[in-house]
Amino acid sequence: SMSEQLSRGSPEPATSQLVNDIELIFKPHPQEADADSSTQTRYIKTTANATVDHLAKYLAIRLSLDTASDGDDDDVSSSSKLFDIFVGSQPGQYVLLNGPTSLEQIKERYWKLNKPLEIFYSIRKSAS
Amino acid sequence: GEGGSDSNSFPRLKNVDRKNPSHLSVTVGNVTVVMTDFQPKPDSRLSDSHL
Image (cartoon, rainbow over all chains, first blue to last red):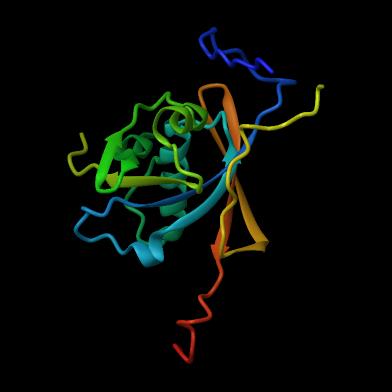
């Protein structure tokens, strides 16, 4: 069967399209000094059209919920820029991802393993 | 035939508790996705009287 998927067209607002679910593990970049991956690892299911920007924003919202009490951050939407998102393409090697990249594209380009996608985040220190 | 063999199916997470997911809608631009958040299952090998 020839089922070739070309994803080159202009992105359209998806109303009736079927999107696959993707399950992924989301954890701190291992080179983050103060990362405690055992407590900060998150197990997520979402749709394949979710992008790196969605992940970063999700993370910003989650972290702001977790630390809502000592909130100095006033704007969640602006803080979504504060995360770098990586995929582990090979052991010990992490590829920084662009915001518009979808999980579907990440899977096709970088993830050849038959196990759930692993995504890493690090907090960008220089905010301005 | 047209059997829907889904070559895009993704491996599912193991060791997660699917009974109590939390959902969060995230909108970027005009695209909204729902992130479902699972809690990890306690590792039975490590969980002897940790509290």
